[in-house]
Amino acid sequence: MSTTTATAPAHQPQPTEDFLPLNGTDYVELYVGNSRQAAYFYQTAFGFQPLAYAGLATGLKDRESYVVVQDKIRLVLTSPLKSGTEIGRHIDKHGDGVKTVAIWVDDARAAYEATTSRGAESYYEPKVHSDENGEVVTAGIHTYGETVHIFVERSKYNGVFLPGYEAWNPDYQPAPVGLKYVDHMVGNVELGKMNHWCKWYENVMGFTQIISFDDADISTEYTALMSKVMSNGNGRIKFPINEPADGRKKSQIEEYLDFYEGPGIQHIAVATDDIIATIKELQARGIEFLTVPDTYYDELNGRVGEIDEDVAQLRKLGILVDRDDEGYLLQIFTKPIEPRPTMFFEIIQRKGATSFGKGNFKALFEAIEREQERRGTL
View (cartoon, rainbow, N blue to C red):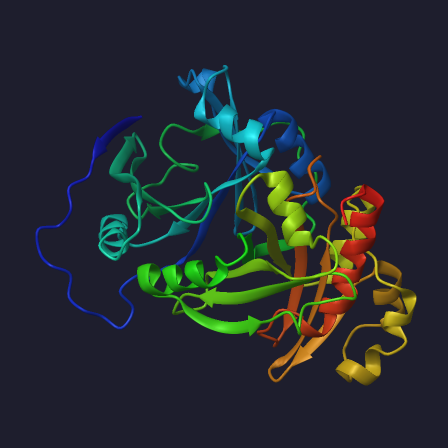
């Protein structure tokens, strides 16, 4: 792979309605202690398929990455190959977790110019990465904590993933479980920083706030949090941002910040077209989910109205349901998938609904508190 600094266009960008057009999530990179074992986990438990590899065999000396894919979801699992690396330091501080949310754009140089001119701190300037399959332009900016956004322009590339990666096609390929795309990604920030980062996404990336929840919406007897959902113009990128609120005990956000040792991605919500089939398969593969009291389902029909699914099935699997003016959604949340009580996944199926399950917040957060109590961190 050859890498060069890409020069910015000489002309001034013309004002447009959306100064930062985004096509969707390109990939999510996690820094992990053992990339090979992590790849096996995501293949076995979540049904991801092997896609690409970079490491010693491709000429890298400092890191190894495995790329797994399921429909439009790409995860890059990266580990250091020696001590003293920035990747290793990140893992030592935060544990396994999301480092990069990469965003697919038509013009990475323009995206970098637009965001840095509006106040974004540069992670790295535009670069051209090339090999025999063409070229990819990338550029990066910092956001909350040590999380970064990388803009990826890949219209001139026909390779398996990115220059520097080779196809990874092992014999072991468990079947997918029906995951389709990244619906949203939730960030946890410190007390008093939610509005700061919402304003940052508004000013720097042109996002708008589409939903806001305060401690009256997201609270239990013991804990509370506040959240605002930021979305880009076409709605393909949605970032809810949470901060803790005053409560009698330590909230899940405070627990996350303590164990992650700073702000970061709390959970990745991935969509499915058949949540019942997906959750049955995930449970059969050993994924554990948060559970709510059985009485939640006694009131379900009265609260959400008529739905297509059999409530008995939802009760058995622990799937939650909520309705808004556009339709309804079904959702369920895994327990943390790392040793630290930090990152987890949400599985979501939208049947018209554009919201985020406000009606489930109390039951969900009481379920999280029960897990916190078991961990001794409530």
